[in-house]
Image 1 (spheres, rainbow over the protein chains, first blue to last red):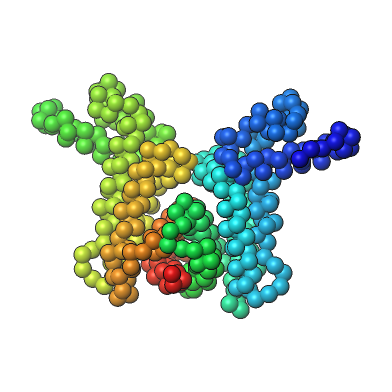
Image 2 (image 1 turned 45 degrees about the horizontal axis):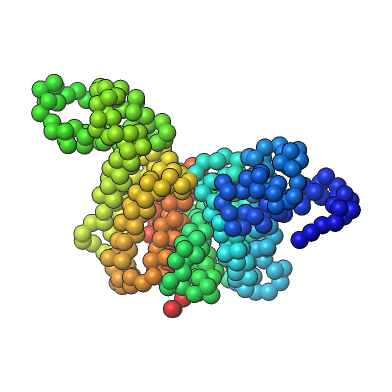
Length: 201
Length: 201
């Protein structure tokens, strides 16, 4: 993709920053965070390292901004449709989740590892995104019944999402045994299945 | 605990190494791996750093040996009883798992983080232990039916154990909403519940 000089000069600093973050997210799709250096981004964007530091301040701040941008993309792309049967909407949303992880596997795995491994700022972004995804369970009308927003249900929905993440990442590593449609069907059916076995408080 | 000089001299190097690993595991219960230094162990064991390096070679090798020892303890302590109803045996095993994580919380969390964060040797020990625990599902007779050892069931049992781990760790951080008995009842019921919704291959 080329951009004419005159088009580039019309971009505001905020638009330029957005453009650089979009590029960072695309580069992260097939790279780990460690591989996503300022040097690489400067080279791909055709601008100087100095200008990149001007926009982002530090490599860590750049990584955080890219990851936050990627998390926003994940949340947007997995947004359930506004109409349709509840289980169908969950199906659409979880299909988009599997597609997102497939399309952004390297970057996604490196984010999960960085967050789980104790990088506190990346962990906060990861947890925020996870909370945004999990909150949907309490707005959806699964099997005709909205999941009550109780502490016990929150714990279980959060744990269910850990199961979903582990399953999708394991399945991508070794898809033997489950087709993609079966994987998604399991993800959809397992949420009401685990909610149904929460003991009465 | 004090040991007489004569008793100590009777220990073989192998016995002495075991004794030091037991001490390391006890120290890890309320500490992260990062806090478990050779200096601390030498001080607690009342021997020189040099002698500890003689036994273990390096801090990393010492950490690996302690974590392997701790993983063996976890596997042993959560071993299901040999008789009783299948769901009761699962209940006993999962109660022991929750008790183990409660009693060894700091060390357990730091192991999960180190393994997830990409420390490859600790990750291998963690994955081995997890596989040993998960393998039990395929020997147990849940609800009168042995779980068939298929690739799809392996993926789901592995993901279920990620859910169990996430739930227990989240619950320890904030137990609001679920009593310990309810937590364990959920863990027990959720395994057959998720296996039941695996689509037919």
